[in-house]
Length: 367
Image 1 (cartoon, rainbow, N blue to C red):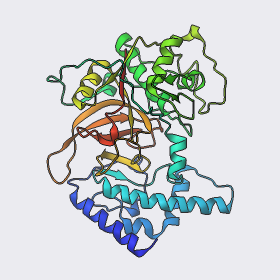
Image 2: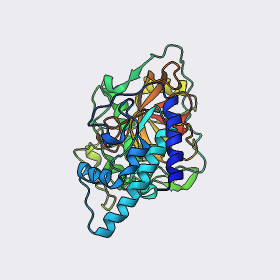
Image 3: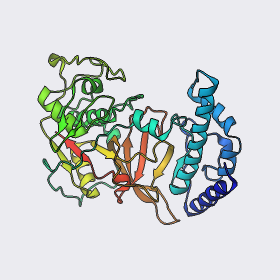
Image 4: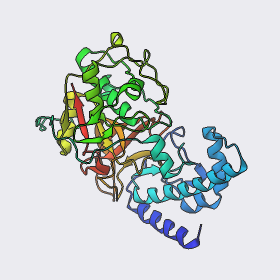
């Protein structure tokens, strides 16, 4: 790496660190980055240390995540990709100082590989306007709310190297709605959606659900309504591929969808729908998630238009971080589908009130 590029990264990181008011403390099992590359005072990446001995960090990464490469050429290629991602992590840390960024299980993947294997939200050219959720009162909303504390959220799941995020976002919303209706939390089958759902968005026939090649939560609701419902995870287990035939058995349906609604861009309305209807399926721009380790993500720049990942909104908090030494700010709590070793035990926190990374543009609720 050139000295000038390193100098720019160092300067950017120094500016961002100075702007951050307080540091977050994270469990060593969550923090997936070499400790020697961190500033002990605030837990953030030290650019000079991180980029000084890349191969040492790469070997540590291989050991931690059980990686293996068949040839010396493959090893050399992944080392270069890892170095590029380490530079990206340092850049993300500078742009997103209220979070912690570093080495994750995805650090040997190019941006394109990461998008192809772990994202997969198919956004139509024009978002569906039908089934708009009614306006709800917002004056009595609780200051903090988390559906995990009320028993409406199943354990963190893992989609694997399959672009089925949309299916996990869908089942999460239906699991929550089913819990609110019956008092029973049942883990539902994503594989049923991956194998059997080929629904298309009515406004864009190109945006069809296609297993590991992507899909859309509102399409999936249409499928569930037409098919009658979903089986359990146990009866129709997840395989992480879309090569199999549909094995749906209508006699094993345990949860159904009567209707669904799309929620407005207003984040108070999103909070009201969350509290009233349970966890919400949302889309988000995942550009900062490949390097995310913990804290509240509130990047200086994050496009609201490049939505590429389906996740589940499960709660919110009033005080999560303190940018530029002001008071602590509110945040959203998001359940991801990359396993419990990613992020904060499988969860992502992002600042609330700014439509950050487009999290308010594709919000839906089911009943």
